Length: 260
Image 1 (cartoon, rainbow, N blue to C red):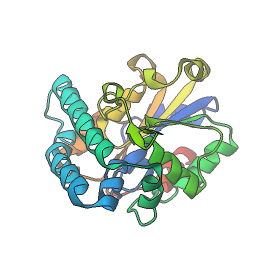
Image 2: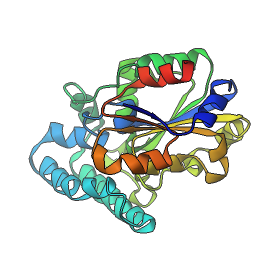
Image 3: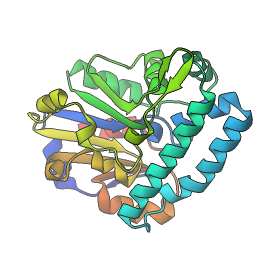
Image 4: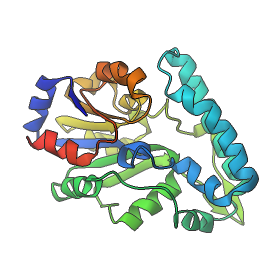
């Protein structure tokens, strides 16, 4: 189901050649039924790691999708979730090889049309920022395996470091779903992006819109994928995104809308 909420901005964007794209990863580039990148490793390792991960997921995921929670309170809750999840992963992720092995049979799939969409942006020399609150090491490897980590793509995410058989990540600087914002992009890249006349933003939760500063929203065409709690959240999504693609739509729909 497609909902066009801002026809004027869409028509403006169709004529825009000098733009960049900023795209969420989990359940935006990937399907709505894919596991989140944060869940791939616990699912692979099983045991206590999976048990602890599921306990936090089952508590916090409904809160992430609850738009009745006050914004600042939700930001605090999401940061708390990220800290707990990465602390769990740090305990059990003993080597980088686990990341590679966990991808072998992972329930992680690009939406239909995502490969063609990213290839098209590459061929047109459009800069792309993929911003994710997930596991950057795993996302990077997945995109490489799918053959879509093109030279025009910058991945901004949470990366583990592996040194002397130990796993490190700074939980104080974690990017959570509620604090993904434009300032996370390196300044030298922002200087290039700031010269662009338009922005295409794709996400799957309303907080993803914060990936672009509010002062630049008038230049941004926002597209939201809504696959969960559709009945409860459709009005909220329509009030926030210029275009809403509901019930497992894909990037073929994105390209159809932009090229129609």
